[in-house]
Structures are given as structure tokens and as C-alpha cells.
Length: 391
Length: 159
Image (cartoon, rainbow over all chains, first blue to last red; front, side, top):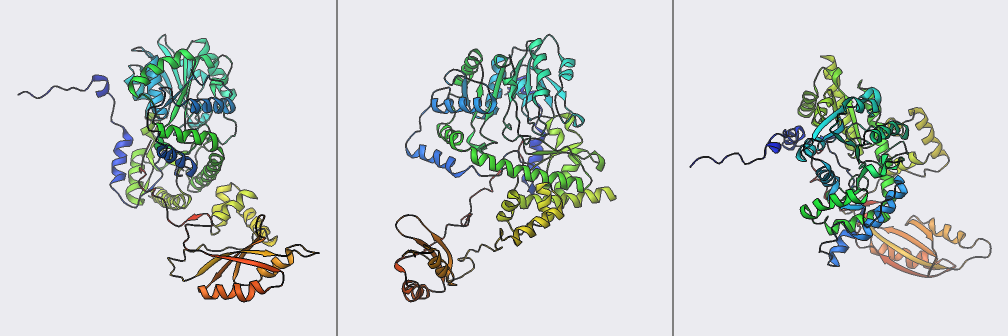
């Protein structure tokens, strides 16, 4: 008997093991760790939202929904997007409820890419973009956003990487892990470039409610952009509903129809009880969302001030719930910093290069952590940094 | 002022230094503001919220619905203030609906509370009737859930 051949597809084999997973395993093996490494809200989903899921189970609503999602949820999403992002999508034909934005991103890349098409995205960024592009047989083209530009994406940087195969631009503002945001003025030149070169924009706006400037603008709302944009959003961050796994994609009919072809065969429909919970959240959860945002804002203030005090001044994030802290001045690289901080002070932060090579020199600290924990974490990090700087 | 109050309501032990960092304001300003809130009696007191069961206390609590006769010159106020002065009374509210005052009472034993109701409260001139409900178990006290929620299965690192 010969050993079986390698059955794994080449393009899957080629995806590198996630750096965050390695680190996660070290953290998981330790006890009493305070973690600033978590990319999800620390709030439990508000009770009335959980109760809506329970109620739907009690009522026996355990069947499939329409492939596109519950009609009343789609109507609510359409109203919500109109109200907050000023773009209108037809609830019955242009809104698709997905299993989180992760599924939505995978689905829309697969729906639009031919093998070899180039997808431009900004980095440091969420860990899934580059692998999702590769899984959809596209070519990932990254642009580094820099702290001196407040981690904004600039049209000239996009122009520099354009080729005849460029097809898609992925945007994620506010950005995980940097907390960078884009204003209307920042987006306008990008929209002009996108139109000039006939690109499609996939905009992942999962953190848009957590924009501390108070003026989130979606590129989909700029003139001429609706027809060349797929707007992705979800419930995980704003409503503290990560485990419910509900997101949505809004796009013109032809694009929604294309995504739907994948979604209906791969997923069928998003989980019914989660959709019921999402409906409750979007209809009656905005008040809590605003409360949570205020909590995050205060924690951000606290962390920014604390890092400044310990001699590691950092960019004040304008959105999401992460601080991207430059640690090069300590003489360590990001992984050494994170591992030693974990071993010596039992605080977990994520090495910046987990979010792409350009994240080297930074660590990501999440402030989606209870305040009393943040306080202890800051004391421990300060002690660690002081030790490094006096050596 | 409002965000400062909210933070203190959540945890009155938060130090001015930490409050200053959270609110992005200078420490001496925070200290001054707290002093002013205290002086103006916006902040009335700082207290601990205790789980009596865990503290092994035998405290008995009751809520009493009280109907009273309003007076010509002060409505319900004089009588309500008078009832509120008893140390057994922990809170007292004027209510709409089927009765007038909702009075929260605490005592060392059932008997002590019963004696307070029968000998003090109901004998006050102007009190028409009382209905006493004893509390059996506390699930939530001043916004704090006594049985916590499971939230420790959260991943320690996630993207």
C-alpha cells in the first residue's frame, strides 16, 4: 500500500498558517491571563435581543427562511442603511442576510472574481481578506496604510498599484486593527479613481457604528458609487452579537443575484433564530448600542492616556475598539513583545504582523475588555515597558 | 457633568486619576467637579451594594403600599416626609395608581418589621391602610445581577 497522495488543493495549501492561531494556542495554555487580544465586544448581547431568539424557539420557528433572509429583517436592514448610510437598497432584491460579514466577504469575492483578477486592499487589516481572495482565485494586492497618514488610504497609493487586471477594491473603515477612519473628503478622490478605472468596491463597514468622530460616511453614498459597491455590514460589533453570526450584503440586483447563487447552495439561509434576534436588535437595540459606544470611547481615552504615560504614544483611534501601539522603541519585534509580555506579565496582546507584514513594529490592544481588567492590564504593561527601557 | 456622574454611579471608588483618563480631562478639574457635585447635593452618598445572603445577614425586607389622606396645604408631602424619617424606612415614593406611597422597610426580623407596621406606620394620623409584602429572594439589586452570567468561555485571542 502506498501512502495516499496529498489531497489538499494547491491554493489551499498555499495559504499560510494564521499567526494569530499560533499565538492563541500559547495564550490558551496559560491561566490568569488578562486578554487585550479579543476582537469581539465584552458586553453580553442585550437581554431583549437574546430573549427574542428564545421566543422564536418557543414559538417553534425552527425552519428555513427565504434564502435571502427573513423579509421583515431585510425591510428593517433597508431602512437602517437608508437612515444611517443614506443609500437605498430594495429589501426584496438587493439585501442578502448572511452568516456574518465573513461569509458575505467570501461570497462576494467568489461572485465577482475570475482567476487572476486583482483585488486591492489596505493593510494592516483583518486577517481574512488575503486568504479569502486567494480562495476565490484572485490575486491579493496590498497597500500599506501608515500611522503618519492616520492609517487612511490615499488615492495616489491605489493608483500606484493599478494594472489592467485590477478589479476590486476592499475598504474597511473604521479599520481593525488600526482604528483608522475615512471622512467624505478622504473618500471622494478614491471614488473618482474607482469610477475612472471601472473598479468594484467591497466596503466592510462592520465597525461603522463605533466611529467616535460621529460622522461615518459610506463610500456607497457618494455620487455614482452605489452601482459599483457591495456594502457589507452585520450585527456582531454594534449590537454585541458575534456568536449569532448575522451579517448582510447590500448591492445592486445583478450583484445580489450573483451572490445569492453561491449563498443558496453553500449556506441555504442564515440561522433562523439568529435572524429573529437580529430583527429585534435593529428595531429596538439602538439605545444600547449608543451606550456601548460611549463605554468604548472612555476606555479608548484611558488606554491612549496610559500608553502615553508609559512612553509609548500612539495614534488615537477614531473608530472600532483597538489601539495599534508602536513598540519598536522597546527594541523588540512585535512577536517578541507579545510573547514576553504574556510570559512575564500575563497580558495578551496581538502581534501586529498577524494583520499583515506591515503590522510589524506594532501590537494590537483591544479595549473590548471590562474596565477593571483594563486597569490591571495597563499597570502590568507599564511595569513591563519600564523594565525593557531600563535594560 | 453627566458622563462623570454615570461613571461614579457605576463605581464610586474609581479614582480621580482614572476618571480623568477615561473622560480625557485634567485631574484637578475632575476633583473640583466631584466636590461641587457633593456640595450641591447632586451626589447624596456613596454606599456599597451588599449580597445579604453571602454576608450571612438575616435582614428582613418588605415593601408596603400605603394609602394616606392628602392634607389641605401640602398634599402628601408632610405625611410622606414624616414616614420617611423612621430609620426602618429605606426608601419612600409617591405613586400613581391604587395607593399613594410605596415604602421600603428593613428590619432584623419578621417581628420587628411587623411591629413597625402595626404600631408605628398604621397608627399615624392620616394613614388609611397598609398592605405589606415581604421580600423572599433578591435576583437583582440596584442594577447588579446577583447570579452572574456565564461569560468566561470567551476566546482569549480572536482576530
